[in-house]
Image (tube, rainbow, N blue to C red; front, top):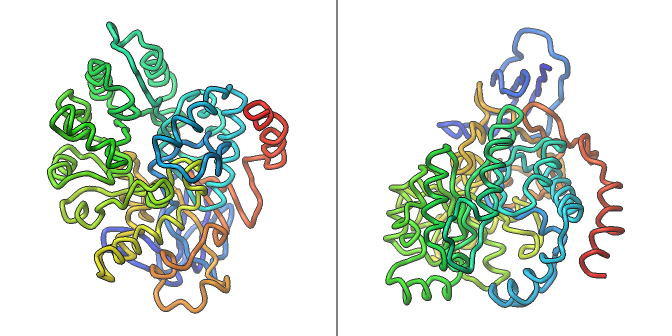
Length: 434
């Protein structure tokens, strides 16, 4: 399949961060073939006119828990620990595979309509999630979140570790790399009784070429308790057990990370998955993103679970990721619009270990069209400024992942929204909440 986007404004996110008006971008199979200012030679199966449209790399959501879409708005108004222990964990105990599939499908519909083409997700019931994701067409790094509250004699026989072993064997690299498997420790504070589990997972990730995904220093309480009991931070404690030796880590939140933590992140290639909306909603704080960027940390962007957000609209995160530091530091360029856009594209691609996030020949054809004829995007003095501060997920006209159009002009091409709604309303909600 050869597709041509004609007369678009291309926000390339290439090395020069070029914005090309009246550009022509061609796609062959699942790769970008060319980026030109003139029509390329040859015939195409489909030409997509782009006058008034911005073509940009698909957004990358670097920290999600997509089945938790079923808990949108549930248990609001509480700090993280109260919210988890009194609301979320009891509700999750009532999940079954069918509920997870319904919540996953609902999340995927929201994600593709908002221009997200790749996610990094930490949860369980991973095989059920993967089947829904394969059908929907997005790219996904999936990791089996691992908790443990008692000592383990043989971590390799612990069921979550067996799940990881099975997922790696069956799905890592599945469908030409659409699915990648990463290892995961939910958090230091949800597995402190079994440091040998940390050693095992760190070694497994390194031996199998997987990334590592962990919640890190999300709240001040978590960070201080670790300092009090272990005389070091969660990030560095995990490092002492070899958790970050795989060479590609994602530390979600990092609200309370220190300068020393940031230096370790730079050295060990640990990306921060920044979740500004969730951190604000749960009262966890504001991550020190300008300091991380100056320290050379790769900062990506995530929504967290919809249960603590309450949206998968990454454009909302883009705006807040730039504006929050500007307000905190009283500096209008503390985090620029371009730096925020990098978090959701090229930085996210680096965090996930994917050849995407930029419009360049040979890159994965993960592309979205944003409608700049919408009233909220007129006039346009600066395309990047409009994308970061004015655009919304509802402005996305088309979402393509791996060269396949998943969503166009309000229609889903790989998802049955009526069926998804029925499953949520008639099965998942009654099953979980009666």
